[in-house]
Structures are given as structure tokens and as C-alpha cells.
Image 1 (cartoon, rainbow, N blue to C red):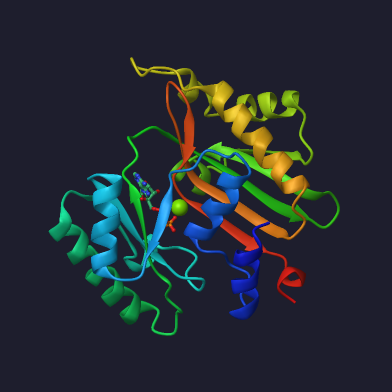
Image 2: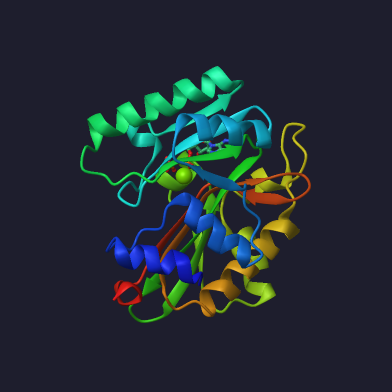
Length: 234
Ligand code: ADP
Ligand code: MG
């Protein structure tokens, strides 16, 4: 676990890592993420957007906000400098209104990922079994139908294989109505890396990659949330 990130969490007395911090930690573990950088002003956000190349996405970066889009904290498809600058101000205004007490680091700036099949990979700790990984399809399939599968960490390759095929929505990943099949091998490899990472990082209490975009070639986490164990910030 990154020392500087742990240190800042300790200083701020909070267990939630921001998306930028979470992705930094995950990237170091070899997990495929959409790179995100922290901008502390509209000018900085515009400069970063130019480096990434348009269109970009801006998201509020706060250790006090779990669901960024719920409060108007995510703006996608920003096509030019004016749009980025406006989005920065709109996000700050929305946060001030909806979460006036939230501590704000700035915004996360990242490239717009091309659309893919949305899946979710998560980790929670069970009182009996310890870390458990969850896999499911994104959006309403998880929220309403609870179409998810679970395996206990550490996973073997066979577990990753099976947990993907166990969900009822698996045919969606096999391709349907002319859609190309998703890269299930890339999802298996991502799940294995998450399992290895979780196994050797006891400071982590919860992990959410939601969504991960699965493509016909590759898969990438578009959003990431890490929650630390209270002991990790003592
Ligand atoms: P939260 O879950 O905290 O509301 P997300 O980071 O998941 O925020 O963003 C909300 C939605 O915006 C995602 O589910 C995804 O559909 C879209 N989105 C977020 N980041 C990107 C990105 N880099 N490229 C394309 N779409 C994105
Ligand atoms: Mg999300």
C-alpha cells in the first residue's frame, strides 16, 4: 500500500480513498484502470484534459463522497476546454449545495473510455470467511436482480473462470444480437489480480470496481473505490 496515500488518510482521519488514490493503488498492483489525475483548479483541469486528449470526464475528488454521480459530481464527454472549465465549476457548485461539509481535494480528470459491457468486481470482508470477491454485470442487473457470484480469497484460476460463468447474465458476455463476445480471459485475469492484491494488502476493508468495461479485447476499471480498515489509519 502506497505510504503517501496512507499518510494522507491518517492525517485526514478517513478510511475512504478517493477515486484518484484508489486507482493509483490498483495500478501499482497491475490492475487495468482508466488513469485519473487530480486537478485542484479549473485551469489545472483544462491543462490535464489537453494532455489526455478530448473528450474527458471530470469527477469530484472527495474522501467524504462515496457516490459521485448521485450528487452531480460526474461530467462525461467533455469535448473542449470551455466544457471542462464549466464542468469544474458546476461540480464544485453541486457539491457545495448537496454535501456542504465534504472535504474536496479537487476533481479527477481522465480520458473518456470507449463503451463496453459493464461489469462489477468487488471485495468485502466476511466475519467468517475473510475477504470475498464478488462479480456481476453492471447497472440494473446487479442492483435489482442481484445477479452476482462470490468466491473466497485467495482465488484459483478455476474460481475466477467459474464465478464469471455462474451469473445468469453470462450470455451477455458471450455476445448477443450481433454484439461481439467480451474478453472473458481479460476479466479472469483482472479478478485474479484483485485476489492477489487483496490477499497481500490487509489494510483494505472494501473494494469496488464499478463499472469495469469489458471489450472484445481487454477490460478496464472506469471507477474504483477502496475503503481502508480503521486500524490502517491509527
Ligand atoms: P460513481 O459510481 O461514484 O457515481 P463513476 O465514476 O462510476 O461514479 O461514474 C458514473 C458513470 O459515468 C459510470 O458508471 C460510467 O458509466 C460513466 N463514466 C465514468 N468514468 C468514465 C470514463 N472514464 N469513461 C467513460 N464513462 C465513464
Ligand atoms: Mg461507479
